[in-house]
Length: 102
Image (cartoon, rainbow, N blue to C red; front, top):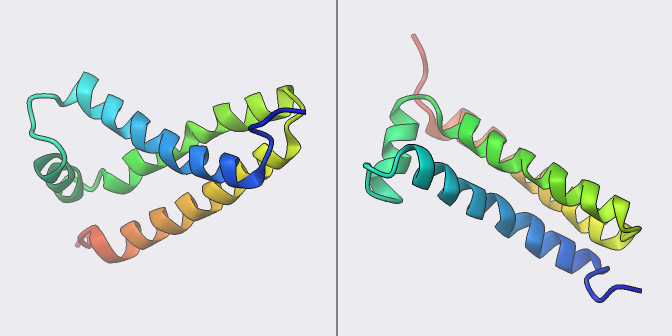
């Protein structure tokens, strides 16, 4: 029906859309900090990196909703796979890259 109704298109867009949201987050809130090295360093040392990744990953819910609304089930399946990959990324960042709170 739609050319975008494939799982790999949903996966690709689901992986790239949060990156765009991450850039917009920096652009509107922290543009005085250089992107990406100093900004990620700032988020990492402020214990905020995993939280910002979670917010960016939540943007995939919009893609999922649009896919379901347009009856693009295979596209939505790819978006769900990308959400699972973002959950794994959040777990990795939380446990291995953010310093421990003592």
